[in-house]
View 1 (cartoon, rainbow, N blue to C red):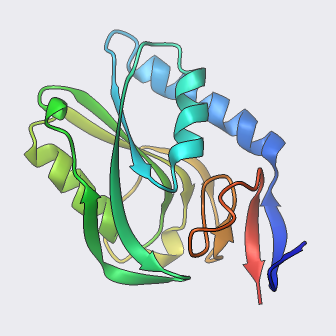
View 2 (view 1 turned 180 degrees about the vertical axis):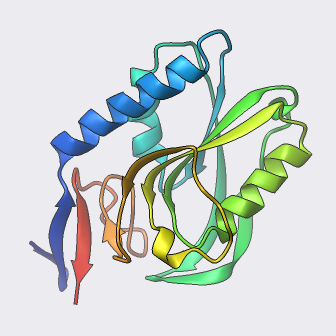
Length: 175
């Protein structure tokens, strides 16, 4: 597959994604059987994953979003810029941060501390993708869709300079 000079190869197809999202929703629902979690999606990358995940949940959920930026093109900047902050409504709640990909761990570590400092009762992380080979900060998501090697991927919400989020599969960007 080639789009605007990028060669893309499907890594995880839409059927596998849908199956795994349903499994994650069941697992989270079981863990929060008697409590309604606050699901906080990280914009922009997690919006498709978050929508599919909450539709599969078996317990009532609240939904909020935050927005951070830590990438430029295919490279992490190493710093986190907050564009839409953690809402005050996290105080006393069980929070599940929903992220598209945990890579270096810098952004997730920052967000975990930020949510905890706002008074959340508990904080767990649900990541569609986990790339532990690039980890700089020791972060391990509580719920993981797929562990992937050190590939740059797009699709299903993940982007390259704001493009390719609409692709239904997760694709590796090939040189």
